[in-house]
Length: 160
Ligand code: ADP
Image (cartoon, rainbow, N blue to C red):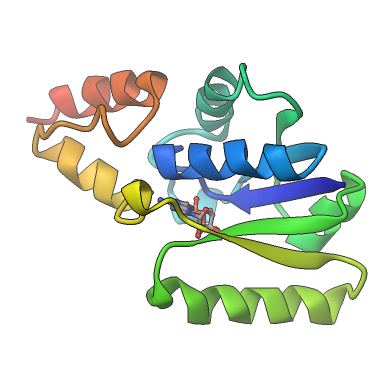
């Protein structure tokens, strides 16, 4: 089975990475699909987000990265993925995730959405929280892979 794990990953956190790791133990392949949506004005370019992910998943068998800018179900189809993988941190994620899952299912019934519950160590983590901590010079190395921590420190060092 091949899973597509779509998201903004702006940037990748250890919570995302944990989901990729656990997903790859369940599925033969996990393709991390990075959303290319310039309208969202991402902190990191699509290229840099993909580099951060590529460097962080090197040791994970069956994990790969791609980009997309249309419908998630179209990306899943073009990658021959059997399912969409998403993470659930708390009840607050649930309503939004359920709405997306129903929307995607209404577009293509052949692609199921599977949720993995976040590891409790990472349930407080989001890309935006990490960026906020980095903005004020707080410790982020327990929240993101090394390459991301280095990038964030570079960006925010110059704004403090
Ligand atoms: P999106 O903009 O699509 O929400 P994100 O990059 O924020 O993209 O998240 C992508 C997926 O990863 C979502 O399913 C989200 O619930 C999940 N996710 C986000 N943060 C974590 C975390 N700390 N642990 C596990 N999964 C997470």
